[in-house]
Length: 529
Image (tube, rainbow, N blue to C red):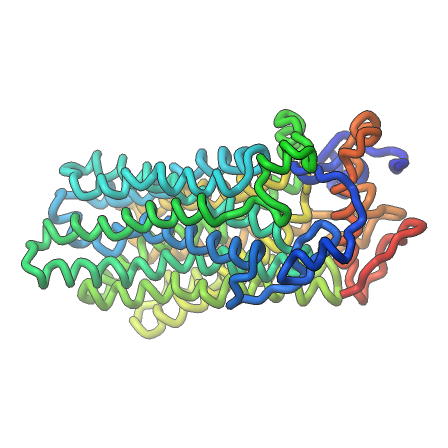
């Protein structure tokens, strides 16, 4: 396949790389999908055997079963990572924690996942999401149990850091959905899976105080009850890890290792997968964007219960219930962002997805500023809920675009983007919530200003075949050039690029119905959704 003239180095142009960008790490032999193949699946599928319909309450194998395993494992990790937050008023008295200790523990809880999410991206690309998800859940289970035996501030910070490694399941969650569902519905699927998983950050605000109260009612003292309570998320880790390992499936056609043995999937080179990820400028813009939607959500999960407890002098249960509203909004907010992304793309293509990100995330920043400036309980709750909805919807909108940035380096780019969320959270907490320079209300206001400012670079994301927020598609750019152009002639001669070409064909719907876009290559069959 010929490439456009004048193509530069990967990621070098703000108008996109029209011939040498990443595709997908799993290269499947190019064979026309037969009716017999399609009948093997309970849901209708495309030429890559990715589901083209999303039935939320179905357990159809492998697509919907994978969906439910994915979000529930991520939910479990969110519960354990933020299980300490609603119990901080008790834990700080038991361990004599200072404001700095609490702030540093909050930073630690999200910092561990920066590294683990990067590693998870590579594991998904090379070993498959099933192993990555199962192993990280089970390997972090001992850290959750160790919360019961800590006796010092340093131990508290270290253990929360170790538990935070489990948040790498976000990367396996989003990667897994991208291997199972067609691009036309990927915003909805990714948004729902991650949203329901993130809901654990709100659910733990209800679960842990309830478990604590039940243990206290059974006769335990407060300083013993909070320790025993951590056995609940600890056992959830073990159970979910075993379920993912035994019931999960890497790809629609089977597990990665077995497909590689059959010769149905070719092994890619890690060096190339990594290179195409880090040299794509879009990767780094989405790292920044995610740092100030998911990152601020993680920050708020750590500080919001204590904020209402101290600022409005509420009791532990009441402040926990209010704080739970922030995380529980994920059940609808993040899926909403993905749904809006898919609906916009249906009519106006990729450009609508990008506008959707900017609108939602900027509104989230505005409502965060309002939360920081409000002085009454009722106004603070309204501002918090609106901030939560917009920030979480922006997360869903971002992962409505990330799967289209690259196919060859999808895992690593997902890992980098996810790590950006944790880095943004750690940086924000370090700047605004770990010292006495700002109180929590001032920190929230300044965090809102940063959200608005850090959302602006989305305007620079340009796909040559689809355009950007303000610019139309590049002349003569085609999906096949973008997704197939990263393979060199030797790789093409071996047929390694065929899955990229299939994905390019399936992604033509990103042109939208009402947007003039690149012409379809001879013999192509574009689908308008």
